[in-house]
Length: 105
Image (cartoon, rainbow, N blue to C red):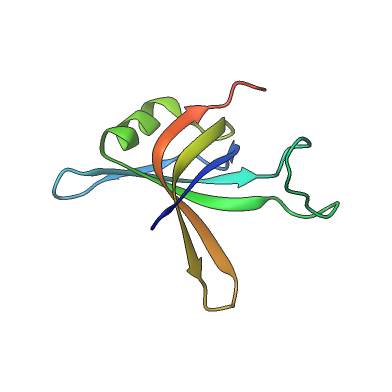
């Protein structure tokens, strides 16, 4: 069973878009996130924001090319994938099902 999540934050750099030999568009970008003041999640003062890799496929990836830029505040919903890294850290990825601009400012 996949864990579905929603993540909000700022796009770190311009999304990378590639098209496979089979014609499938793939977009990827990183989102820096920090729980908001009204969040139930509390981080210690001065702690670094989280970094989440976002991947989108097909029509969603094509839309990312047109609508998402570095510095944009976005909300991403999709399937959470956690990967253990060699150094013991954990990488967080979201396989996006929906991506939208967060217009809260």
